[in-house]
Length: 248
Image 1 (cartoon, rainbow, N blue to C red):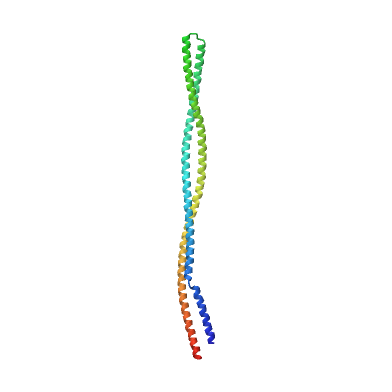
Image 2 (tube, rainbow, N blue to C red):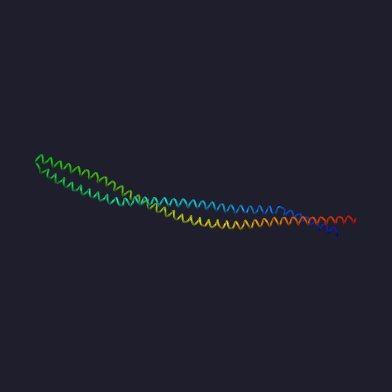
């Protein structure tokens, strides 16, 4: 019967030893696990912050592109409106020159008719000088008209180019504004996500700290009790051995 009791006590002592081995370092393992979870949370928060920074940078780029397009549209529109005012002036000036040239040619034709019917040399010379003077005026008017026609052609071409430029810039602006709206919405959602992550992290961190503290307390208490129980068992086994020795 005593042998059975000693054997049972040894079994209990072995179990206590195994339990002691199991709980040794429990708080350290809990601390390491808590640190791993904390670092993972911090990584998620850092990644979200980096994504927000990237999106905000994209938003700034889009805002600048829109501002540049607005300036481009404004400048091109100003030039376009200036041409709209200039082209009718050029057309009127060309019509006036055509009328002037037509009138001069009529005068020249009349003078040439007179020249053909005049036999007096002095009178012929005077008529010819008038014809020459009027012909020079015609040449001057034609040169001016050619210059104005060239300017008109260039203005019409420039107007078409400006219209195309304005349409293209407006189309690009619409696309930028659409993308800007998408990026702003994305940024707002990511900021909401970051706020939720920070809130959750605060709760998780507090829970982990409580968990680690509880683990340390449990490990300390369990270790102390296990040692006390082991000491008690040792005393019992020692008493049994003394008893057996005395019986012999």
